[in-house]
Structures are given as structure tokens and as C-alpha cells.
Image (cartoon, rainbow, N blue to C red; front, side):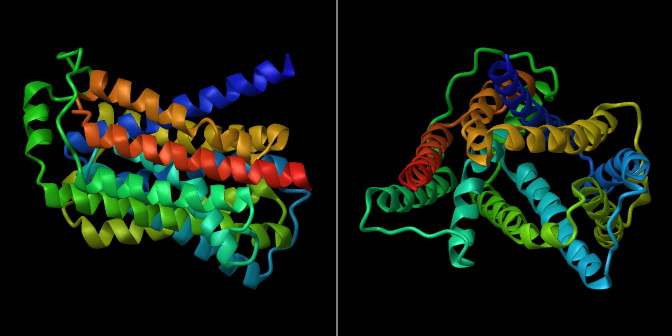
Length: 331
């Protein structure tokens, strides 16, 4: 029964990720400011997490030295403020399918950075090391394929889009310049690099400040302040700061409460039960679901290049995961 529960939670996390990407893309399709969107999402996430952290951790919270506080501030800048603003801009330039495909690169890139920092080792004279290197090469090939080889559009089975803008949106999507698509692809690569570096660097900080809930809450609070100044610098038209009872409000609320608050907790629970490799193995499921739902809900055109590039990245992910699993078996 416990195994079934872990699998169900892992699948639920995949659907939550899909919901975040599709609703975010839907908000941008209506013209919502990217920087304002990120700011509001961080505000709601902070308001959601802060009372919970205060109630649960106020009596057992460890002391917070200035050095650790500054490290958390910089982590918030890297893994939340920088990541969310760049990935949101890249999503506006490309598609939800491409964003889902790029998620498969994050565990591989995290492995590369961990190896550079001496946290991971690999021996190319052994099969496990060859598998890891091959996985990295496949992921890089996948990124280049998605960036430069869009190919023909695959036929959509649905022409009535719940969250899209009908035929007008499809025409706009088709008119996106190739340069914009390539730029968006490489912006996603930069965002994935920021998130991977954030994952690697937060390990030592968590050892110095082991309260995971307060650690996450502080990052959200710091990112709220940072995101406010970023939004203020890039969006001077305050009429675009207004939120109505529409898809923009739904997207912000979902991304904050479900996408950050609930999802982060479920991911921590799953990693505690089965480890990070188990959770990473479900990332291709996110790509498959996104590819289907983005076509039905947003009317996005799925290209052959996206399918081939995504397949290469999935192959690269599983190659690296296989190499790591074989190392653990040998140990």
C-alpha cells in the first residue's frame, strides 16, 4: 500500500508541474507582465508559508547567523528570483512543451555541476561512467535539436482550446520568429543552470540551517523583495499590476500555493521515502502530459523537432540515472 501511495504522489507531482506550465503560459498569452507575475507568485507563496512556519517552527527554530542569512538571500536570488524570471520569459518565447522537455535536463545538469564541485565522480573507463557521459551528450543534442530543428507541425486532434485564444493564438504561435524560439531555448538552458546550481549549493547551507520549512519560507520572503524591485525596474505601467478575476489570478494563485507550497512538500516527502532518483524518473511523464494537454488546452503546435529533442533528453536522463544506480549497486 505504501509503494502505491509513493507512485501516486509522484504522478500527482507530475500533474502539478504540468498545471503550472500550462496556466503560466495561458497567463502570458493574455499579455500579463512576466516580472509582475513572478512578484505576485512569490508574495502569495510567502503569505501561504510564513504562518505555517511560524506556528510549527517558532519554538524550535535554530539561530540564524548573518552569514547563513546572507547565503539564504543569495540562494533565493539564484533559485527563485533569477530562475522564475528567466524561465517565465523563455516560456513566453517558446512553449509549455519545451519547458517540460527542459526539466529532463535539470537532473543531468545538476550531476555535471556536482561533479565540478567534487560531489560526484565518474570513471569513463567503466560502463557506468560511459553511461553518464553519454547521457550528458544526449541531453545537449536534445537542446540543440529543439532549438534549431523545429520541423513540421504535428496535427492537433482538437481545434477548440479552453485556455488558448482560438485560431488567433495559433496564428500568433506560428508567426513566432525562429530567432525568438532559439533565444527562448537558450534562456531555458540558463534557467535550468541556475536551478541546478541552486540545488547543489543549498546542501551546505541546509547543514548550517537544517530547518527545511523556515529555509524555504525565508527564501520566498527574500525573493518577494527581490522580485518587487525587478518588476519595478521592468514594468513602469502600473495598470499592468492589476489582477482581476481571470486566468491571471488563477495562474498566480495556483503557481504559489499548489506549485510552490504543496509541490515542494510532496517532493520532499517522496525524496525521503524513495530518494531523488525515483522522483527524477517521473520527469518524462511531465513531458508527455504537457505535450498532450498544451495542444488541447492552449492550441500549441507540437513540432517534430520538439518530439525528437525531448526524446533525446529523456534518453540522456535515463542514461545518467542508470549509471548512478549501477554505482550504488557496486558500492
